[in-house]
Length: 510
Image 1 (cartoon, rainbow, N blue to C red):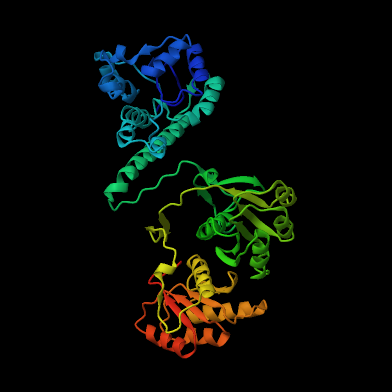
Image 2 (cartoon, rainbow, N blue to C red; image 1 turned 90 degrees about the horizontal axis):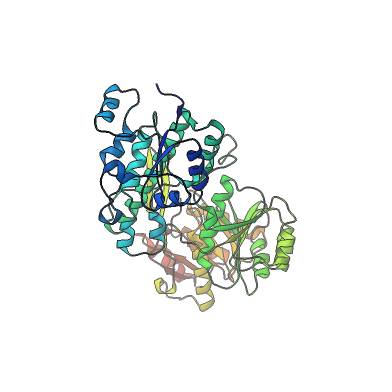
């Protein structure tokens, strides 16, 4: 079996030329014969380095506007031949096929072209054919050929060339081959997903090429990774590395706060993916103070998020609380000076970004995929089920409570008043338990539930919840409706001067 091998010949054909110069210069110093095409050929020639055009191998010019350049048996034979196979080597001689030991090829920027909003024809032209074929061929034959398929690998390859004088071990070739197949797989996934935005074939494919190992998963004995482009969502200004649990909470926080985008100053505090405090006020300082009042106990070690720039006064209040992460669209210089005094406190500036329209999670031996819950209850959705209609203030609180309820683990009940979260019952197996928990919690923090509102993520199968709510002083309810016994809850509300609206939309969150 072939082990370490020196590089005597190379095929170089790349879209991105950045970082290529030192590699080409070292290959030239090592006496490597270089073959190339088009723009790369010119790039190498301009460096004053001898290069052999691929056309000299194939005796065929680049055709169809450059669509066909390297797709030829003399090129692929030089890459795919097996060094220890006598018949392969005999055929190289018979057909005058040159051996190729190194392939440096990258791919047309398909994803970048799609993201730029280019026309379909421009996007189609960025589907690489020759490049992807060369990468797959070289990676397949890693026992004899080294494949460098991304400029991200130029630095490590340059180090190998300098240290080992162009001699590459089998393990190194196999490692680069694995990276090449990842490049190939990711590229094909991007192309399929582009086409599938219109074709809607029931196939789910995802690929991330920028995974980051975390300190651990949910618990120290579990390994954890994050696959995604964190920098597209946030600028991290300060603090320790985010953990697996931090990232889950941050995700919950930005999804919740998206409901209050460009609204009045709103502040939320989350713990274990659920809001334990949330308020909307005229100033972000007051919004924070009232959000914290919702549950100052749970706020310890929580995730804090604002929809408005954080100022000095708010930062001074936050600084008194131990919290893991603070998220805002911006921070004043004075706020940063205060908040950065805690070395480990993570400060994130949230950018505008597009949420994925799909939710994916593992399940059994596969995955579950669903549409993101992009529905936010609005006044237009309200169907007043009771004789008594909610007044304007109650309508605002119902909408406020509904937004929180949508982002709280089921079964859930949310209690609110004056655009402040009073309490919620989260993740309970019984909706009655969720309500009782919310009431108990609100009262423990000295909230007056009189004239408050209640939101439920799903319908009431029995009138017990509205009865408990009415006895606690709650005077308006929002729920999706849809139970065969809706009338029982409606009747109780009618008899006890409670208004109820139904939205027709359930917001389970498991």
